[in-house]
Amino acid sequence: MNTADIAFPHLGIYLGSVGKSVSIFGFNLAFYGIIIALGMVGGIFLARWQAKRTGQDPDLYSNFALWGIVFALIGARLYYVIFSWDSYKDNLLQIFNIRGGGLAIYGGVIASVITAIVYCRIKKYNFLLFADTAMVGLIFGQIVGRWGNFTNREAFGQYTDSVFAMRLKTSQVNMSNITDEMLANSVKDGGETYIQVHPTFLYESLWNLMVLIVMILYTKKKKTDGEIFLIYFIGYGLGRIWIEGLRTDQLQIGSSGIAVSQVLSAALVVAGVVAWVVLRKRAKRQTVEAPSQKTEDSLDETNDISEE
Image (tube, rainbow, N blue to C red):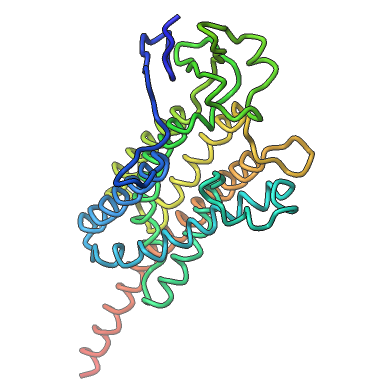
């Protein structure tokens, strides 16, 4: 066996040494944080590009980014802490130890949407149009950010021997995420024990890339504001339902064994489809009413001329 830190044996990919951090001028910077930051910056630029191609002011999105990112991080942390309360209730100071891990993307998304609603109210801007544009940047950040899970050896799934199977050293993985099935199928080599798992971070990154492509291509074809926003929730939700089912580090509802993200994803998909139908009906009604109003206005003008 090739004693690589991370390997995709069926694809012939063996990565000999994959660090979790880098030292710059004596400071240790986690690759996870660097990758998340790159995703955020890239997301801002993509949102600006989307704004420009739809005739909006790109600066509106750059100005929002600072607030959106700050509250997204707070939301992501709170979401994680709430559903992992047993790990923090006896040591509340650990809530602030983000370096120890623990950010949940859904918490960040919820916080971002709330922040955007407030921002649009202050700016007196159409929220649905804003969300259509901003969500393109958000999902780009998710695509890149998931690779932080790769360097951290986390957010992986159960044992698999599929073509995309990822092999990891157990010494570099959080033991709480290793299941009996993984250990039963583990292999030893050179004093190291290796598990082979679903690279769910990769699945989600690729799925989100497909959703992003659909969002960008559909932008010029949308019938009403809000459709791109809903494509995000429906598309991401559908992917997260099945991907979350593979993971071994799920945040669960109490001791029910039910994954929070699967329930929330299913709810968002259903709500997204219903909202789509409502938006389409509203847009159709407005389209029908507009010509009627125009005809009435024309008749009024004709009557005015006759009376003269």
